Image 1 (cartoon, rainbow over the protein chains, first blue to last red):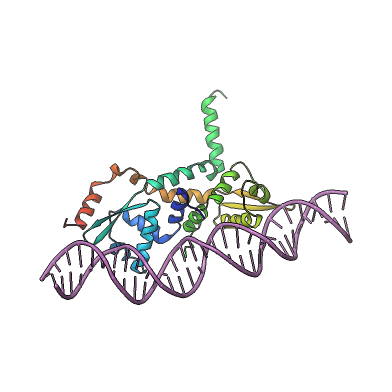
Image 2 (cartoon, rainbow over the protein chains, first blue to last red):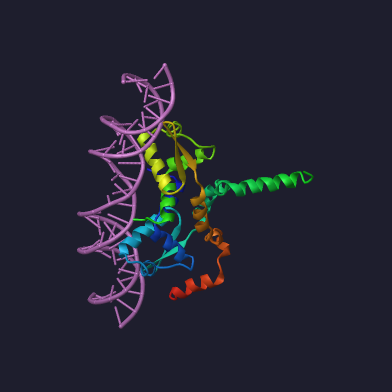
Length: 111
Length: 111
DNA sequence: GGCATTCATAACCACGTAGTTATGGAGTGA
DNA sequence: TCACTCCATAACTACGTGGTTATGAATGCC
């Protein structure tokens, strides 16, 4: 049962609807109804997705009249990226070797 | 039910045991038994974690004698990182562009 | 051949998740 | 005040997930 920060963030990102919600929030804050419109799901389903995103720290919410505005909070995505960055050198091993080669040549330009 | 590539990868990363498995595979290929040793879980539990990781394309497996070696395949992590990179400019809110702020204000004209 | 080791799979359980419909509360506006 | 809009929550269903134990297949070794 994953309850740490990274697990919660990755778990929140493991749903395409929630990723689409985050993408739309890049354009600006949106209400629940506005977030719902492009999806073929009920309003309570969106409300629960927003709760998951809020629990992961990926959005913050403010009350404005009868509306509830969702605001993108991308800081947890930075932590997720930081975790993934440890594997950068394994993405393409030939790239890794190339980097090492270039570093070596730079250190010892004569050889 | 998320079945696209990104959802599968993020879902696989949403478990601390699976993230720890990937971390250990950075040192080199390991058998199921070797992967199990640091965790307080049964061998079938590890086998299923490996199946999830394989389904996400994060490891490949080869048979050697009676052992099954797991090998890190970090390419899907690159795709995950590429998705996250779209939010880099939102990590620091001071980078919010003016038109986005205006769009938000326009959407809530009344106070 | 017989045995031990390594691992996968099946069956089961507890719990989480994603969806639904129904309902009600809070704020707006006539 | 009354109606309406926006949204949260509860109750329910279906299915996924992570764990267990039990079992058996495959391989190496004697």
